[in-house]
Image 1 (cartoon, rainbow, N blue to C red):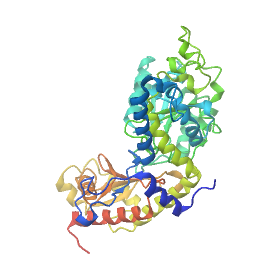
Image 2: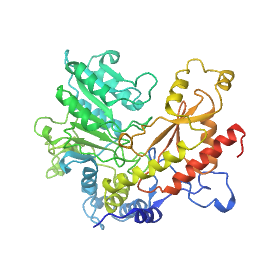
Image 3: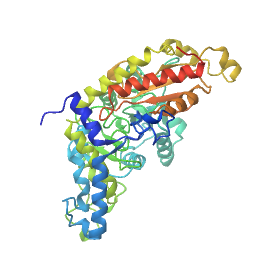
Image 4: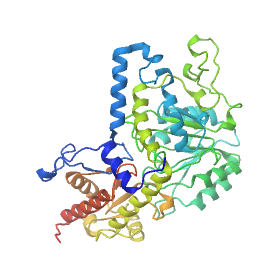
Length: 463
């Protein structure tokens, strides 16, 4: 089946996704526009509901009501609950570039991260450090620190956090690779985010993995903002492990089920350290044997049976991914959408080029009062996500200026009032994400136009 073209994907948007209306989100706009869909640019935080997911969930509720426990083995839609994960595993494997045996649909992001670190983080007095990006998502930071402490190490000594150069917002590939080469003999694990949640930077996953493996380090990835957003080839890149959630670009719903990847080279040499019955050989699982016999590969790390409702919801979205051709055509569409949004934003008279914004941000220590803020000039914004399309996914992160002021809150509230849904990350960032699966060029145009109006209202200027 040929993947759909651009116009066909616009049809998918109207046919498959339930986007909140302006009225639903409380936008303060003209009555005739109240029932139009809002401009939803927040799929990097929570993807919208698909009609397919809603239908599948209703089917499972009906099966629960009419079959009860029998649904595990006798299912009217051929989705026996005991094998429910098998419906999504092949699709997840295709998204991350892996074999089915290397992927498990299970748990939640941080729980899976702990399971993987328990299996792969084997520090020694000579090699005990964990290399990660500075300001990683807090849950990751907590996990890294707690794992270091569990092994008897001070996180301040065990964790190396890489930060951008002074006056810059994102990490340079050369700096990451050079640090791995320099500190490699002391590093046990290299673990970065595929896409950095705050800046939207897409890390060079293949290059970092290659550099880590050359130094004998284990290399893992948090793919929360990467899966369903950018193409990946985890097996071919020789990644050791990866973890992800599914409620962002995969649209599985709030708190949706997570997943993990374990390279098949570890299949016979690394056994799960925290075994559970769902990781046991399914041929004898329900015989309840006293001794654990792990499923070969990633699925041996399963502990409990997966949530049927969460998995069915994920399946509805993944079916759409498959229908439109997976990440090849979606990445092409993403590049066009994000470039369109960026082009319109940088034409704004409130846009500040990144070099000037860097200088302003160095003033953070002194720009603490409204008096100082006013002296720094009119409100504006810059884009801290890399300009190179190959170094970002769908997200653009807008840094609101002056820093440490109320500009971000006021602009964000104004956008919401006009029907544009992004998300805020304190102290000064608004993230706007045109997701390839359901957003349109019209969404990009409207978001940029509303941002301009928000700043005009802020500065009391009317064109």
